[in-house]
Length: 182
Image (cartoon, rainbow, N blue to C red; front, side, top):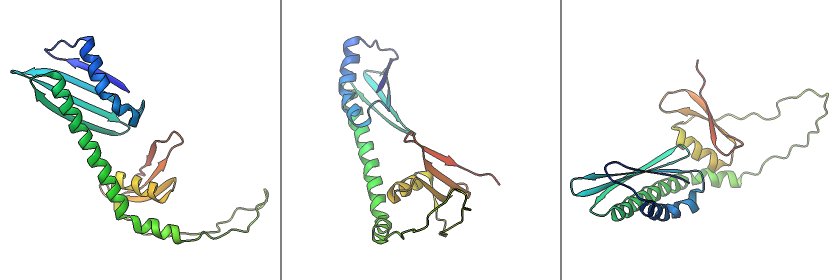
């Protein structure tokens, strides 16, 4: 993980920086090299204010705390950040439970076997058609639904713009979004 420490009005020595990095090491086992931390420390009257920002993929988590001691403020800030991440995880798990009926349905549906052999010179034809109702959702819900279904893409109606969009999983593990204009 990339860790950037800034001191505005406070000198940050190597020992303090090493202690902060040691406290943030527990995040590295969960996020690996993907995330980056930005720590800002500055005095506010007799207290020290610590602002901690974690950027990982397309998400930003931010927490701040004030204390007389910098390390105490860092500890409180880390606790707040962990709490935010836990709440986010709980929200995602709840959404998975909300859509559990879809998973149950898909588990019960047996895929049809296709006994069609293809020749190179044979004309390709459509052998299966599917229709479904477009449900308005935001991009995060679309990603969650796509992952729960185990698909590599999902067509959905963007609740914010009203446009039909496609979210897809890229080979590098990230996501792509196709937003047509018409």
